[in-house]
Structures are given as C-alpha cells and as structure tokens.
Amino acid sequence: MTQTIAKTNSLKTFKSVTDWQKDIQNYLDPPNAWNPTVGLFITGYLLATLSIWQWYQGNWPLPVLVGLSFLALHMEGTVIHDACHNAAHPNRWINQAMGHGAAILLGFSFPVFTRVHLQHHSHVNDPNNDPDHIVSTFGPVWLIAPRFFYHEFFFFQRKLWRRYELMQWGLERSLFVSVVLAGIHFNFMNVIYNLWFGPALMVGVTLGIFFDYLPHRPFLSRNRWKNARVYPGRTMNLLIMGQNYHLVHHLWPSIPWFEYKPAYEATKPLLDLKGSPQRMGIFETKKDSLNFLYDIFLGVRSHKKRRSRMRPVARLFPTFSWQRKWIYLIHKTALIPSKSKE
Image (cartoon, rainbow, N blue to C red; front, side):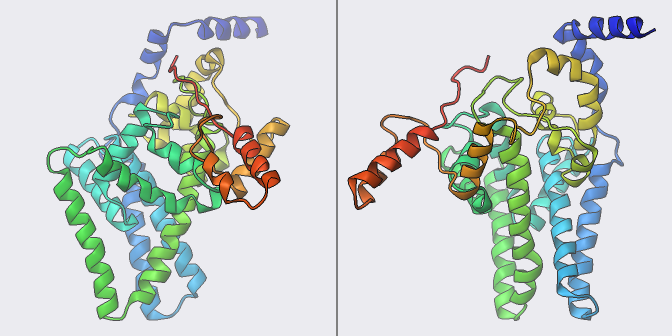
C-alpha cells in the first residue's frame, strides 16, 4: 500500500506544467457572487461604523475601538487587493465598486493601487521597475508604512493611468481632503486621528511586513517560481488572509485569497520540483538572521557595489575610518537581483 502511494506521488510530480494548469483551473474560475471577499467588504464597513458609533456613545474603551478600526481596515486591504485582480466578485461593476469602496476606507486610491500593483507583478524584484521593491528595501521595516506613499509618486512618474482613472483618482483624493477639512471645521479630528489615521498606520505596517517584505525577501530572484515564497500555516493563513501563500498568488494572480491554501496543497509537488522557497527564511542561516536584523533597524539597501548612490553619504562622516565603515556596510548589504526571469 505504501509503495502504491509513493508511486502515485512520484507520477504526480512529473506531470507537465500544462497538466498542472488543468488541475488548478478550478481555482482560477471567478468566485461565486456571494464569497468570503464580499463578506470581508461588508464586515469591514460594519466594524468601522460600529467603532464610530461607540465613540459617540462612549460605552467602549478606546483600545477596543482602535482594535475594531484596525480589523476593519485590515479586511479592506484584502478586498482592494483581490479587486485589482478582478477576483473579488464575478460581476465587473461590483468588483470595481468593492475596490473603490475599500480604497476610500483605507485612504488609498483604487486606480493607483491597481496600476502600481500590476506593475509589481510584471517586474518582481526589479530595482528599477518594481515599486514594492523600493517600499521593502529603502529603510527600516518599522518605517515601511510611510513608504507606501511612493506608490502615488510612481503612478504619476510612469503615467500609469488609463481612460477614466485619473478622474477617479481626483474624486477619491478630493473625498479624502474633504473629510479632513470637515473634521477640522466641525471639530471631529480626534475621531479621524484615533479611528482612521492611527489604525491605517498600523495596517500599513502589517501589510508592508506580510504583503511586501516577508513574501519577497531576500529580493534577489526574478524567476517566476522563486521571486516570492510560501510559509504554510493555518494560523498565519487566517491572520493575514492567505498572504503566507504569496508565491501561489504570483503564479496565478486570479486565484482569490481564500483559495490560496488549497491551491498550494494541490500544486506543492510542482513547487517542490521547481525549488520554490517554502519557508519564511528568516532564521535558516546566520546570514538570513543578520540580514533580517539589519532590515529591522536600518534596512537601506544599495543595488550596486560600486558607484552606488549611497556611497557619497560617506562624505558626511567626520573621520576616514567611519567613511570606510559606511562603504563596507553598503557593499556588504547590497542587493543585486538577477536580471533574468528564468
């Protein structure tokens, strides 16, 4: 019996990529009209409304209200992500509405998120063209949230908008500014600070770590089977809504978040065959651990060992000894991803 199972698994491993694509087709189909992403969208707005209502009722303590707001925004982070891949709802218009609705609650712009994120998928770990590479490697991990503003700069620098998206950006940004101005005029900025900006900052750190930083480190491979990683686990799957199976998302972007785990389990022999990273990769070697600690406290990475843009910073140090230490540090921590996607 054991030999039969081993033989079956062996045959499964050597199937062609085309055969694997047929096996995973069920996960690639559009989700049902009522699916977990719709539940996240509705629940996020309900929790946000509940936290604001309880703020004025004064019955619940502030930490509980902040926690509810954080949870609401955390849920909408998954909604906007799936919506930008048209995986939130089978109806195109409802999918778009969910994307814009999630963006408004998060303080994002849906066109910016969509175009910049699709650019990331096209150029994973490319220092020049992957916007998320800058977010993950240009400063300490604990300051990753403010670096998401780079997405807006990248959107306009590359002129990524299409058709009505520039108008949509203007409407969403006008709404954001109007809410803040109303908060100043009608004296409810304390609600905005405590139940929107604060939780949004917390969600920014959470998404930055579990959506950008951990799935792509050490940021060196552009190979489609190795440019992101998987670190399986039920608890993480629940807490970060499937982003611990991030490589599955990169390989098949139309799979909705709630099917990452079963899709991974169905294709694990293929990922094993391709040598895809399937651990968090932080404490596997001494080098991994030191790199992780460096990223937490400093995290600025050069992409060239010579003629680095960070090299002139050495002139700011008062002694030649400190200048040499700085140059040694940027050489030692430089990230030079592979130019090939193969």
